[in-house]
Length: 557
Image (cartoon, one colour):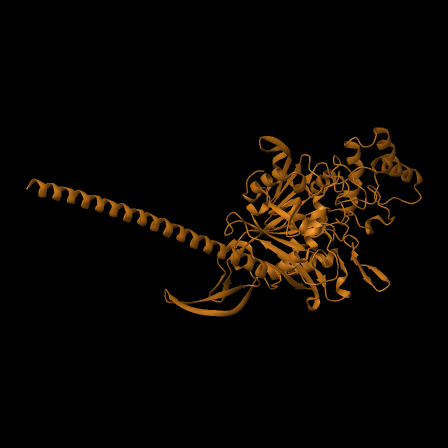
C-alpha cells in the first residue's frame, strides 16, 4: 500500500510539474504572441502614418504648389507655394507674402525670413542642399502663400515677350487678380427656399460659394496682404484694390467683414446682406513707400549712425537744401558734398550697417549702386534698391554662404521636378532677378517701369476703411531707413493712442520701440526692431516672431 501511495504521490507531483511546465510554455508563447501582435499593430500603424505622410506630400506637390495665370489671356504665369499653419489652420490667419526687388523670389523669404525651413550650409542629401526646421517660422502662427511676382521673378514666367513687360501699377493689378483667384469666392446659381412665417412668405436665397482654387477651408480665416522692401509700393495699392473690387461687384470676391454666413434675405423687396470678412489689413517690413523721402532719409541716417561727420552733414544739408535724391546738375556744391558722403559709405553694407560688406558681384543680397544718389541721374526712374543674384557667395568667408546653397537648391533638377516647376524664361533661377531684362536675339530690353513714386495716397484711402496695419523697420537698415518711414507715417495725421515710442520686449529684453496710431476704424502700429537690417526677420527672427504673434492675436506687441 505504501509503495502504491508513494507512486501515486510521485505521479501527482509529475503531473503538477507537467502542468506547470505546460502553463509556463503556454504563458511564454502567449506573451510572445502578444508581443508579436503588438509589434505587428505598431508596424501597421506606422505604415498608415507613413502612407498618410506620403499622401500629404503628394497632395502638397499637386495642390499647394502651382501656377496661376493672370493678365490678358493669362500670359503671365505666377508661381506660388502654400504652407498650411502648423498651429490651428482652421483659425490662424492666412497671409499673402510678397518679396522685394522688384524681381526677388520668395525662396528668400521661405529660407531666410519667415519660412518653415532653413538651408543647412554645406550639407547635402542626394546632391540636394539639406534643409532643417526653423523654430521661428511664421507658419507656426499663420498659413502663408509665397508668391513669385511680378513676371520673370523666381519660377514665374510669361508665354509672350509682350507679357514680360511690367510696372508698379501692372504688378499691383496682376497680384490683385492672383489673390482674387486664389483666395476669393464667386456665386454660382441661386437656390431659392420659401418659408412661411407669421403669415408672410420670406424668400431666402442661399448663395452657393465656390472657392476658386484649392483652399476652401480658409474662406473664413483672417487674411492679410504682407511683404517687405519694395513691396511697400504695391501692397497698399493691392489692399485698396481688393476693397474697391468688392464694392464694384468684381468676382472672385474677397470677403471683407467677419461672418461665417453668406445669405441674402429678401423682405418685401428690400435686400439685406450680412457682412462677411477675412481681409483684415496689411503688413510691411522696411517698406519703400515714398521713394524721394525714403532715399533722402539715407543721408540723415548716415549721420545719426556716425558714418559721416557733423561738419560734412551740416555743410551738405545746407548746400543741397535738404534734397539729395534729385539734385540739380548745376548745384555743384551739393554734388561735391554728396560725393564726399559716398566716399565714406562706399564700403558700408547698407542693408545692415553693422554687417560686413562683400564684393558687389558676390555679396549680400541687397546692394545699392550708389547709397545716396544712385548712378542714374534720373534717380526716381532707377532701380531704387539694387539686389544681386546669389550665385557665388561661397568664396567670400565674410558673406552668407547660405545664399549660395539656396541658389543651388532652387536650380536642382530634382527640386524643380518635385515642385512641378515649368520650363520658363530663365536657364538659371536666381534669388533676385534685379536686371529684369529679357534677352531676345541681340536685344536686351528693360522690362520694369518704376511708375509709382509714392504709395502714400493709397495709405490715405485705407485710413477710411475698417483696416489694421503693421509697419516695422530694422533700425540698422540704410536701404529704407526707419527715419523716412516714421516721417511718412506721421504725415498721415493719425492720432497717437496707447504707445508713443515705447519699448517693446522679446525674451525680457528691449527689442525695439513702438508707436500706435488710429482714426475711427483704422489702426496702425509702427515698430522698430533693434539691430534689424533690411530683411528684418532674417536678422532678428525671434524678435519678429514674438512681434507678429502678438499682432495676429490683436494684442499689444
